[in-house]
Amino acid sequence: MDNDLEFLKTATNAILVGASGLRKSTIAQNIAHQAVLNGHTILFTTAGQLLGDLAALDRDSALRRRLRYYAAPSLLVIDEVGYLSYSNRHADLLFELINRRHEQKSTLVTTNKSFAEWSEAEVSPQNINKKQCIAGQNLDKNKIRQV
Image (tube, rainbow, N blue to C red; front, side, top):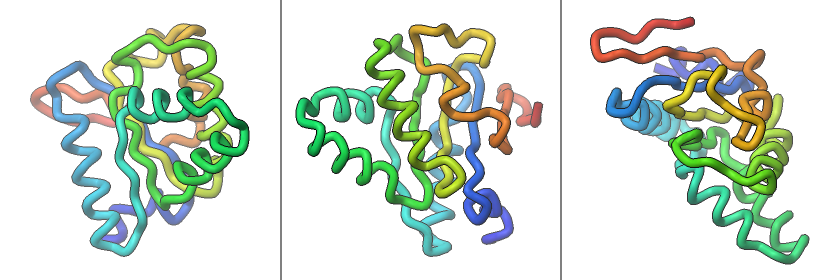
């Protein structure tokens, strides 16, 4: 089954894109579960939890420590990106985290918005480096197709 997790070996990011109710979170949980079964470390969090946690830290040393915590696992799953609007600080924090993980560890993101719908004030898809994504997916109720 580890062949299905090839993106973890190459530190490639993945994004699951689709409307609400299409089980993107369940797919992400299943991928994370398979990663654990294959010996990888994972951390699953929502975007709101992650960004709220990071934004609440007011000391640089505490923020650096927390960023290291989120940067450590083989796979970081960030669920529900785009469901809420984020401040520029939140976008900067996500960029910092993604930048720390870039080409070293994989990040899997779920979102209900296409790239075209993401605004400057929200966490931008460039922060996730869509050129490095293997699974920019459009999900619908009948099928999953790669774009």
